[in-house]
Length: 309
Ligand code: CP
Image 1 (cartoon, rainbow, N blue to C red):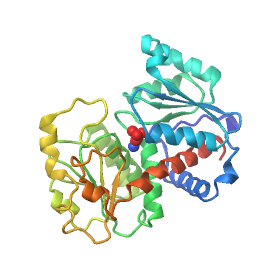
Image 2 (spheres, rainbow, N blue to C red; image 1 turned 30 degrees about the horizontal axis):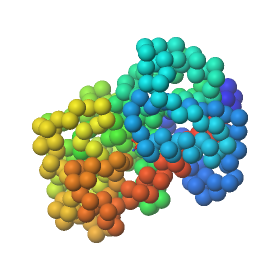
Image 3 (tube, rainbow, N blue to C red; image 1 turned 45 degrees about the vertical axis):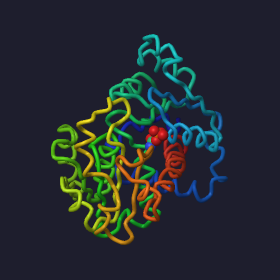
Image 4 (cartoon, rainbow, N blue to C red; image 1 turned 30 degrees about the vertical axis):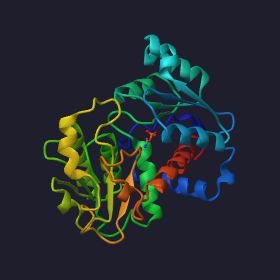
């Protein structure tokens, strides 16, 4: 590690506005001139460890590490001794002995924190039940490209179940001092511990988090609507919750009174005709494919920040 300082990427809570903007600048530079950065991970071995399925995160990290000149190993916990009960703490010591970094998608946030505590190499959160910070870097990059990120009076609305993605959006927007609305049924709440954290941070960063239970009110005047799956990975299908979420579907009716140039975002995978209709996902308003492509560029920016500066 440069300067021998280990830097993880476990949650955006650990990152300042300046650091987030630096990563986004690095991502932009790499996207514009990829050839210039093709050796910055030379001689670095970085593993991806997945306890849950992934398409975008897995492929974008593997390609990104290769494009930066590093070597990537993709590991499935079921085929490691982890699958037979070896602890993450012991496994972390083994990772440290062979690797220069580890990207982990798992269930509990505490697991990646434990791995980080036990090893001296950077640990990157590729999604836990609590947070998905890599996704939010790509989302912010996409909004920046659309000249929306620091637009005056931006109305950005997350529609759906409060989950790891909305948690990280709330933290990311708050770090940057940008207002954000969460539109969800009144029965679904953002975790108390996160709300306590956000209460302090919003006061410091001078932004506001709005909670709106009425979908039409939330959509009115929105510049951006963002949605995600109603049932997160690893959760049991919950018919009651799906019924509760139906009024929050992003569809033509919801957008009837929306701005003409509204943008639609989704972290994907989409469940067509559930949280979003194909009519909207495939419309000219949708920027989901650019958003997905930016997973690659944003993570390359992150890797440059962690390893090269
Ligand atoms: N958005 C996202 O993390 O996609 P994957 O689950 O396919 O990695």
